[in-house]
Picture 1: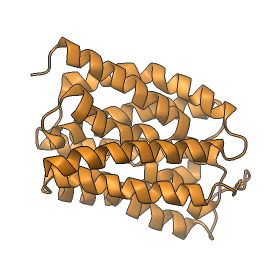
Picture 2 (picture 1 turned 180 degrees about the vertical axis):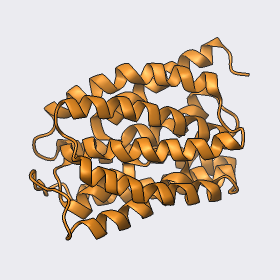
Picture 3 (picture 1 turned 60 degrees about the vertical axis):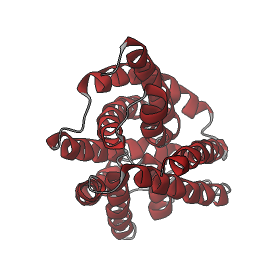
Picture 4 (picture 1 turned 90 degrees about the vertical axis):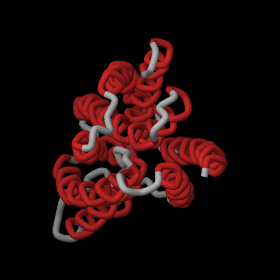
Length: 258
């Protein structure tokens, strides 16, 4: 049973997750699981994964609303990406529930390092602001969507840290549009994963509630800052550095627990 102190830490963690979701689309997703495990004190990695998936999905929906108000969401691209990814997320989350929890966290951290490197290598690309769904990018969106959904479900996260690079790679849209559009898929993937975990009783509902409440304010502040950093490659750099820091900590903690 988690006490009042740890519930407060859950609300603080939610604010951090909401802030980074609004800022870079995926940072909140990769922060949620380690915050649940190492700061809030959730003992079971699988409960941490299920609870964070639900909280991230709701917080992502809040961030999506903020980005939509600022017209940074490519709805058709995001919807196709999400539809394909839901199938992958369902398969991935089913497999992830049956995988050793500590090994799951360790593999998660390794994937994060790889994505961070790829994002830094693409910093010079400014993207095409007028991108839209067409016959050329639709197959790429379907392929990246399914693969990203599978990873998202397997590791129990919203998947934004993979969705943002996937949207950039498949459509060459600017980073600020990829961040906003990614939240369509983050919401869909998170709800799919959370539903699967809920069927197995792997969600702490009170903790998810306070996590979401903290995230609403955080997502508003993150979206505002994202607009200010949207010029040049500042968002890519922030995204990659955040990934490296969290991945290093997770590798250290999960290695010792295996």
